[in-house]
Length: 289
Image 1 (tube, rainbow, N blue to C red):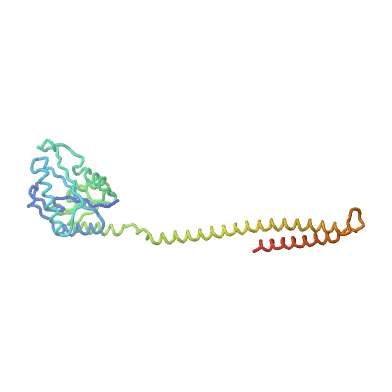
Image 2 (cartoon, one colour):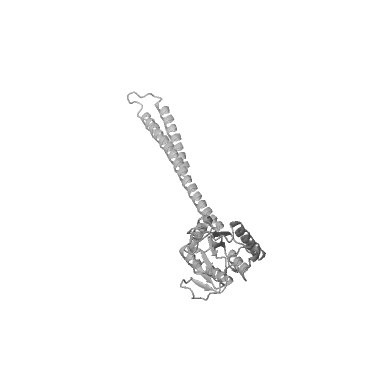
């Protein structure tokens, strides 16, 4: 969420000739463009919040007010500054224009304009500031949860009013410098660079892949070893059986049931047993690789 500096208009940003009704009467206070530039460069949204009961009293209409604010924006632009939003309250219970003759929770000292700006602009009000020259400005900012700065450009002296702001400054430029200095002092640490995060992630992924590869190699080796051991066991068993048959053939030739050529048969079985034994040894050696 963005931080903002809410600004009163009359005697804070521009001179107050009374009920301002003509664009030609707009006069920026000294240092106002520089103050707004400093705040914008520090990352603050700049929001004008102004009571305009002159509309309810019939002293000007909303079209005239729009022209006044257009002239204000033009003069700020000449100084390299700008406002991000303008909020105004045209209501007053003593108004003569029926449409606007009522109370409103957006009229300072109520915080309605600041709260609406917070919702619409997605602002962090607790990290935002209100600057104004009147107690109603300070009360509105405080009620919205903002820190407050009172400027003395309205002709009053510090301590004159019962409502005390968090800070008091001679001018808007002084207030801007104070806010920027405190913002820099309380700025949160910068987040870690994305590249560093990605490097750690790649390293962990590589280590995991190596581990999985080794585990698979061990499983393959164990599987191959088991197959060769099985074949070696089979051949070993057949070799022993062949050896038993050969020995039986070597029984005395005059034994009952023995034929004279039994010797040659026994040699054949001995040969088969030897070949099978060699095969079994071969499979055992292969399984150890």
